[in-house]
Image (cartoon, rainbow, N blue to C red; front, side, top):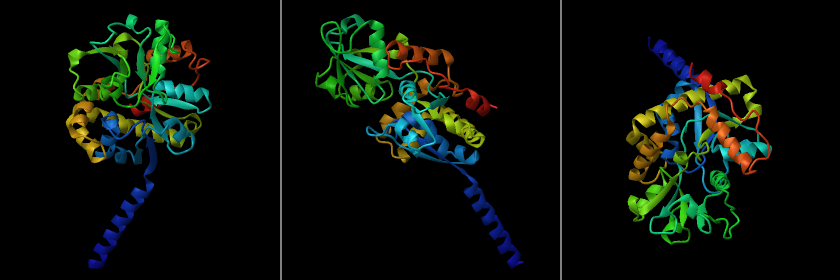
Length: 323
């Protein structure tokens, strides 16, 4: 009997090991550091949603010196989180990225100005200094300025662009009249720095109709031609959107999970997760074709890209994931 039990235990362990070995590896490269901006992916991993799909997912944080487009082009990731502007620029330059899902259905980008400063409306931008992030984050801003007919080369008929670091110091130190912020991150850094909401003039890209798609999931076009890889992406997107749904419904718990994975400042992460939940939408992950078209047109109008993109997105993955 004892030998039989030992044999049965060994068999069970062997099956468990085989199951673990059978898990498909997926490497996800984030656009920025570990924070609630990416809460859905950390929740999906923590809650076992990826494991339920037979996936072993590695989440790689980003940072100021990490370009997701370069990482995936070099084979360092299977899928990346990126803004549509950066992805379309990369595609035109020979990195054939395809949007396979769009968890963020609204943009979180804003520009804020001191209310006691010279800028009250868009008409006041001319001749002033505006803080802008680069590394692919500048495209919505340039498209907006193009829409207003303002040069970004400085001078009396344009604006002076300050290459902004990822903080609010240019506003605090009055190096810029306005700076770029995200609703879920730097806006609250400004509040924590001593500004009251009523002391800030806020230009919200989404409310103005100037938003370009943010934080989509992208894979390489050639890899998507492989049925096995495509099926792996279906499983990944399905589990990820399950993670996003859970995160938006349980923001405090999601923030704690982010903290457990290296996030900083518990209160900030909880506040961020609450704001991010407003951007995720219905958790379907399906790309809105109208928003894609507006994003592409804005980039074309500004000559950020030179030709109409083709094959830059697919509904195949989200359609299959929803079944």
